[in-house]
Amino acid sequence: MKKHFTWAAALALTLLPGVAAAQGQPWLADRRLGEGPGIRTGDLSLHPGIAGELGYDSNYFQRSSEENELAAWRFRLTPSLSLKTLSGPRAPDQHRAFNFEANLSATYNELLAADSDFSDEVSEQRHISGTAGLKLEIAPTRPWGGDVYADYTRMVQPSNTPEDSLAFDRHAVRGGLGVVWRPGGGLFDWRLGYEYQATYFEEDAFQHLDNGQHSIKTRGRWRFLPRTALMYDASLGFLRYTRADGSGGAGAQQDSTPLRARVGLNGLITNRFALLAMVGWGASFYESRDGKPVHDFDSVIGHGELKWFVSPQPDLDSTSASVGLSSIALGYLRDFRNSYLGDYYQQDRGYLKFDYFLGGVVVFGVEGGLTHVSYPQSYFASGAARFGAFGENRVDASVFAEYRTSDSFGLNVTGRYNANLTKNEVPTSETDPTLTDDLRFNRYEIYLGARWFM
Image (cartoon, rainbow, N blue to C red; front, side, top):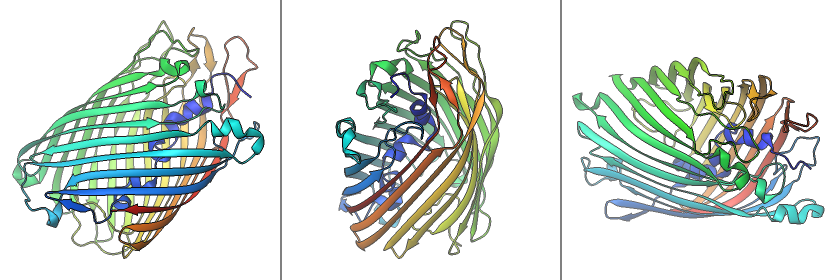
């Protein structure tokens, strides 16, 4: 069993499609699934809920097939609460001064080893993860407005060893505010804002990865047709690692100033088809630390998605949310992200999604994707080469189905699959080239559950 820095799990911190979302349940990630009729209290709607699940995890520590994969039986208990101002036809005042939304959830995870020989290693992984967030929209229907938001997430993720001191458990904090301009009755709007996000690791071995990023963000939209809008977004970030000495046994991470800008179109092109097409440019602008070589991303970024609605949507405009609408979507995403192995990684992902809603009784969603990930040359803290530029192919799939016996109770099944199909053995020691980490893995999870929600 490896006792060294485990790059396979470190890569998973940034590569799995939304680690926080992957730990959470679908009804927490998508409020269309999570909320029931609610409890009205004045101008507010309260949505409490609680869910219990029993499941199986085939490879909890996300090890390669050449290592000892440890499977686990899992129990999850998730209470949740959301509070928001009434919207749409239910709102008593369509021109209120503000809209408010807050949410809170926590998940207790209990694990039992499928192989009794590893009972202690697996049972010690029991944990609590959670999220909290709030958002305030100021003057949402007036020519000048604004917004303020903040959220917090505790993410729990083991490395490929059961040792708690090598776990990637971390806290993510984000907050921001912005000013919105809406001249011309809302056909055009523009937002300029500021955001700060920070990540803090719990274990000493990985606190050299603690980082914070200040960002200036802007976006604009012009509805030139009732159901279609031209879009623009851009951001300039200032990513800084709070520990510049590379302590913790790994290479010192390098600061960067990432820049992104995109333009495109979003909306319905017929009563059945919707199109999202955004294309632009991105650059990472890394800064050398202690003379280490720098490798930058400097290329095209974009996101395209074609969606087909099962039923025609003659009244849906470019600002409407597709709540309760059955659809099939085919998409492609190209972007870059900061990496804990080397400076960055480039992501090219194709995906297919299907969402089905039947009379508020049956909810079904499935998504699958294939991602090609490209890495530049990586280095140890001394500046010595660690591993050459390489690529890998990843597969992800998820399915969620729920049968609702009433407006506030449902029985569900959730399944997930993630795999790295490419063999790359990354050195973990500068002095001993025989110590490597195989980045391949296969992992599937399945859960049966029940939940009460309002």
